[in-house]
Image 1 (cartoon, rainbow, N blue to C red):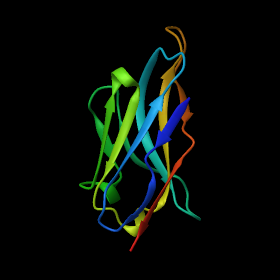
Image 2 (image 1 turned 90 degrees about the horizontal axis):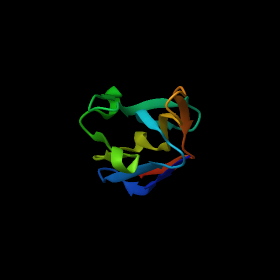
Image 3 (image 1 turned 90 degrees about the vertical axis):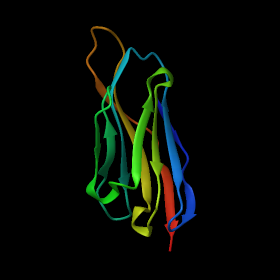
Image 4 (image 1 turned 45 degrees about the horizontal axis):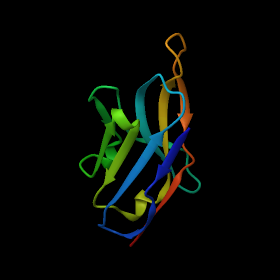
Length: 119
């Protein structure tokens, strides 16, 4: 399972760091990422990181957010700086996980953590 944490209420311009740890009988993790869903909007990709160092960011967060991962801890992080009211959303972590050497990767989701940015 994936357990996300780190959300909260902050003022515009402040920073937050989200964490998401994968646990269970994990053989391998490929891409890990963060998505967000604001009220009345579709879920969108915020940032993703492959098993190496390749990263991908939404244009709206480039230069402000940084995704990283600790493979030894099966954990992905999202450092969010210069937060804006439009960043307010529920943030979900996602990971492509294989549970065994002959098992294909499947997509798993965390429970979501709320980030609220006040102006």
